[in-house]
Amino acid sequence: MSFVAKCVEDSLPIWERCLNSAFLTKMENGTLEEDCFAGYIVDDSLYLREYAKVFAWGIVNAQDMEAMRTFYSFLAFVNEGEGSTRLKYLHHYGLADEEIQKLPQRPENKAYTDCMLDGARYGVAEAMMASLPCTLSYGWIFQRLVKRSPGVMDTVYGPLVQDYASDSYDAICDRWIAFADKVCRDLPQERLDRCLKIFHDCSEHELQFWKMSERPRTDLKILK
Image (cartoon, rainbow, N blue to C red; front, side):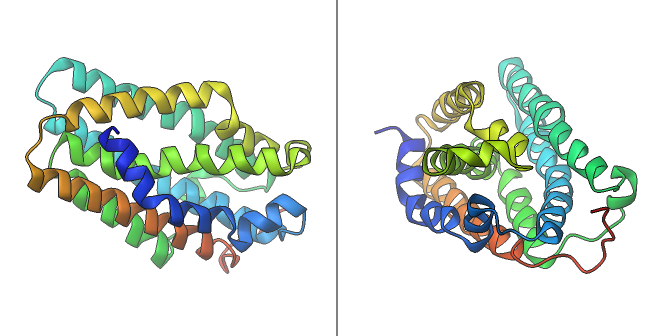
């Protein structure tokens, strides 16, 4: 079993709880309040801004051009792929990115990004472990969501779900896993233990992020 596979196995019970969170259950059955979804999009946009800095740490700590190029490509994917879908949702709700960027991260959101950035500063392997729980859990969650309820693709949530349930996203995940396993290979046990803890802690923060999203933000006025 690869190191990333061990990390996933360790965090799988947490991902199961994410999948069955009230936010995703309501998204699946069509009862999610629009204010909650708009709040999630805002919080996730603020999250992605900080998430991008994890890859900046990867570039800073990279010891060769291959690692630098790989982190740069990951950063480009977050900005051009995930970020573009959220901009469309912001526009749908009458929100401007430049305005929402002035809003504070909610406590659960900030705790998560602080955890990622604190872990990523140690080195390339740690930066990958900080970034992977978000990347891999989203693919795992939304693929299962679509399998359980294919009709979710025909709702307002369809573009978001498609971002993570597609074959192309699977290919991205495979590339990230291969790179993570490569940079973790031959690490001393002390660093492997730290990497596993970072992965587990960030998975726990994923769960708290979904729970946070069950509550609407109180500082938004959206178009309905």
